[in-house]
Amino acid sequence: MTSRRRPVLPGFGLSLGFTMAYLGLVVLIPLAAVFIKASGLTWHDFLAAVGSPRVLASYRVTFGVSFLAALFNVPFGVILAWVLVRYEFPGRRLVDALVDLPFALPTAVAGIALTAVYAKNGWIGRWLEPLGIQVAYTWLGIWVALTFIGLPFVVRTVQPILEELEPELEEAASTLGATRGQTFRRVILPALRPAIITGFALAFARAVGEYGSVVFIAGNRPLHTEITPLLIITKLEQYDYRGATALASVLLFGSFGLLFLIQLLQRRARRAAG
Image 1 (cartoon, rainbow, N blue to C red):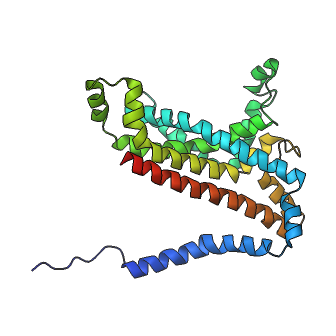
Image 2: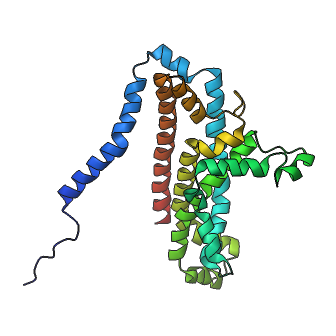
């Protein structure tokens, strides 16, 4: 007779209860508080708070530049993950550690550093200024900051999949006469597609709510380079808590809508890969 093995972790009921309690305290209750606070506004006041020209312009900056930054991070994040996984070179561990720098670096420090580098008298900005390219205090500066903080999400989601992907699959495809492009499209990309979609979604969601690294380099010009998180902070400083939560609810709906869409795309990608 074989004795029943005791699980290391607690049973399903206790684990599920702890999980739901933790999610409720950390995630669900704070999010519910946002919507409850915003519900204190009448429908007319809510639309006035979230639909003014200044707020609409901030949506375009926040969501538009966040999308462009996340989209830009996809190919370069995949290339960086590929280099770190498939090649050995001096300083490889240092480069691998630097990928996580945006995670560890305070966002305010990142914003000040990027502003100092890309300002007109900065190390890089002084060379771009004669070419008529201004980065700091424009939407381009916002894009640089959001690209900086979003790149690790793509790299770290793609890298484990590449480590599990056997090089023999590429060798077999090459033996069967496939070109490098065909091998990438038909062998590597289907395996990476769910991770790429996840990395894009994480980078976009982080960029939408980013404040510290953007507020210094954006210039914060109303109707031009003002982001929605800055308007939320401004309303909080003016004790307009309902208006701030109204804007926050719009960002939440936008982020949740994107994540829901990403989940559907991931399922289709997994079915296609399977």
